[in-house]
Amino acid sequence: MENLKNIQPVEDFNWDSYEMGETYGDVSKDDLVKTYDETLNTVKDKEVVMGTVTAMNKREVVVNIGFKSDGVVSMAEFRYNPELKIGDEVEVYIENQEDKKGQLILSHKKARATRSWDRVNEALEKDEIIKGYIKCRTKGGMIVDVFGIEAFLPGSQIDVKPIRDYDVFVGKTMEFKIVKINQEFKNVVVSHKALIEAELEAQKKDIISKLEKGQVLEGTVKNITSYGVFIDLGGVDGLIHITDLSWGRVSHPEEIVQLDQKINVVILDFDDEKKRIALGLKQLTPHPWDALDTNLKVGDKVKGKVVVMADYGAFIEIAPGVEGLIHVSEMSWTQHLRSAQDFMKVGDEIEAVILTLDRDERKMSLGIKQLKADPWEDIESRFPVGSRHTAKVRNFTNFGVFVEIEEGVDGLIHISDLSWTKKIKHPSEFTQIGAEIEVQVLEIDKENRRLSLGHKQLEENPWDVFETIFTVGSIHEGTIIEVLDKGAVVSLPYGVEGFATPKHLVKEDGSQAAVDEKLQFKVIEFNKEAKRIILSHSRIFEDEQKGAKKDAPAADKKPAARRNKNEESAMVTGPVEKTTLGDIEELAALKEKLSGK
Image 1 (cartoon, helix red, strand yellow):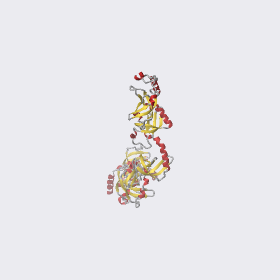
Image 2 (cartoon, helix red, strand yellow):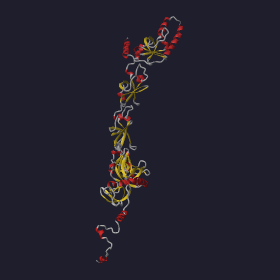
Image 3 (tube, rainbow, N blue to C red):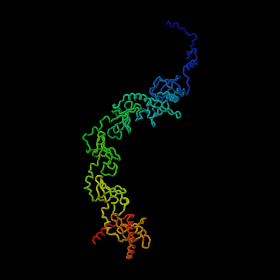
Image 4 (cartoon, rainbow, N blue to C red):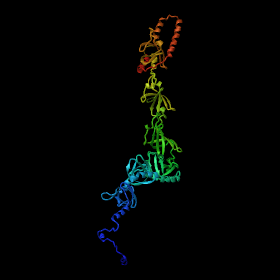
């Protein structure tokens, strides 16, 4: 009450104005408005300013920029920053100071876009770690929102581990480093992998420094390729080559391991500089050769599966990791070159005989032909000399024909043993490869596993008959079938051929006999062994003339006899052309007729 007593009334207080609602006193309303405006920030449309988040909900963020009213920004524009909270300073773009409702319109997205290019270049220059929102997948990687710019995140730059499901990253906000900018096309490439590589490098160095050959570690299957398996050893990767996965044959690593499987591995080798680690899985188990039955020996029969085929042979797995080679030469007794694929294929279960066994070198050779008897063991009893057989033509040479009587039993028919009468220049004139031919065994060479065979021996030698027909001095009708420089080939009866020198082809009128001319010929030489008949047409009328000169002096005859001897010698040494096989049955009949007489 005492204080109230001391209060003095204002002498110039205007009660009328107070009753009308005017309470400004000496200060005018305009002055008060002016003073209030001066306390607010001066802002302009279409510019970027900093503001403070004052409130937020699931849909909107309220931002105070120091203007007379707060602005509202869609929460979607802040999805790249899930850690946004009240009190955070953000940059906003003033689109409109007042809309129809008097609301301040702001955009955070446009503010970021306005300054984004400068910030992107600055982040690359300063090697800054930035945040980005992964919007969607694209070919080869992801699209990331960085400062309002769509940047590309390659699939290989998401993580140090291979990514199998890209979709799990869509909608996530992650930290990145800008690794490349194309100023011309405004393209930005970012990487998340780059953030963790430096840390991993340090981990790798630490891990590798503690590695030792033979050390056993636990790892996780990180990636499987056709050539091997990559194992994550906890910050550093190692490779198990496909050959180190199992002691047995492995077609693909997926037969042994699966992705994300935890396995124990042994360190085989490592490179400090290149940070390469070679791992092994099969080395954790004993070598199969060490566990091979000690009683197994050469000559024993074993069963196995064909695992690899080659032209030269087949590899047979008789136990996991224990293989033997069957060379193609040990697949059949035949000596003809064939491919191993003709006898077996991969996956076949077969029985074989052990031929060689080297436990130190871990090598074994097998054979399957040994399961059958060697056809040459009793060759003399099965194919005695003189026996006749049907053979198959396998190959030609200039000197004969190679044939196979049965698998593993080969023989040679010499070109001279193909025909009694035909002079054959090459076996292809007589038969063909793959054809069947009748043969007779002439000789056995067991050591070299060869038979000497003949074909003509199946028939009687017609020259035995010819010897009784074409006696020296006998005259036969013949046809000249070929004229050569040294004489002519003459076709005689029964399909046999003879030869006459040019001097013996002179006719009685002095002219020379020509091709296709049919004349009488006298046999002046018959050689059974050489299968040669020497003929003369001139000698017929010459002998007649000599008969008319029986009374001629003996002195004149001697030079003629000497001359005839020289001529015959020349005829004998003349070329002998091919002869042909005649009617053998007719010759045989003729021989019997002659024998009867």
